[in-house]
Length: 303
Ligand code: GLU
Image (tube, rainbow, N blue to C red; front, side, top):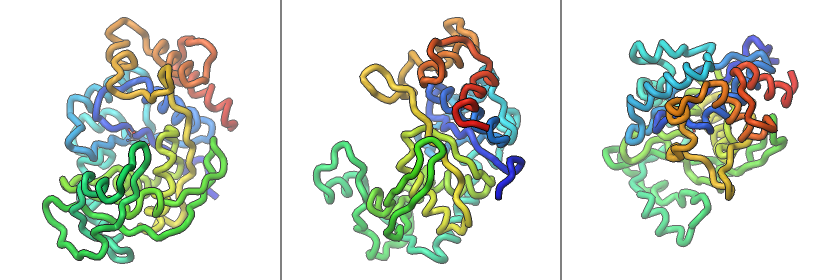
């Protein structure tokens, strides 16, 4: 059994924009469950999408996190300012290359030149639902190269896991997403691949993230097994903040940007209290230190 000293979770933002209240909610849950379970928190920067990530967003993200007072136990903030880091995906291309080679030893990994448009045309009307890749390139034997992505064939079947907040889950990755894209047509590692490789190599055994990522979990468990991970991590998917009308928050929502709130003179404790309130952890937006916000989560999940 894993002892608390060995438990490691992560806070893993993508620097595709500025930090917003959704990130603060995630930080509250990550540090809260970590403190309740005696786990350490790793900071990882998920800048796999080179077209959307910017160094300026990364600098701002680190500064805002520091200002809020959430301190990682592993992957200290200063380490990212010093240069390349094993916890920044953009610095780790050779790690993903090696993982891809390993995966190709036991699974069907193939090049694919399908664009989103080709896939949509093949599938017909798919508005508002996830489109499983229909397998068009599986038997084509394309050589990998520029303009071609890389996919892995997923075995059919149900993946079951118990979510720490949502209970028993059953997902069918092969039906939900089809053969998983590992590298896109621009040569960028995908979120699903990079995060699975990273959780494995960093020794992350406790994953705490928003409910919007729940459908990713079955495919990450499956992929981790194919990469040789003996035991998947434990998963907790927490509620997201919803805007009036039920829409999800996005980085484009300037009213929720930490930078804007700082500029308007709010204190870090007020921002954290607002996030805790919007995520249903507090009846009123009362100012809170990071440790007090974490204690609210600990009280929910038990020690
Ligand atoms: N990098 C992802 C995001 O910013 C989080 C990934 C994860 O927690 O698995 O949404």
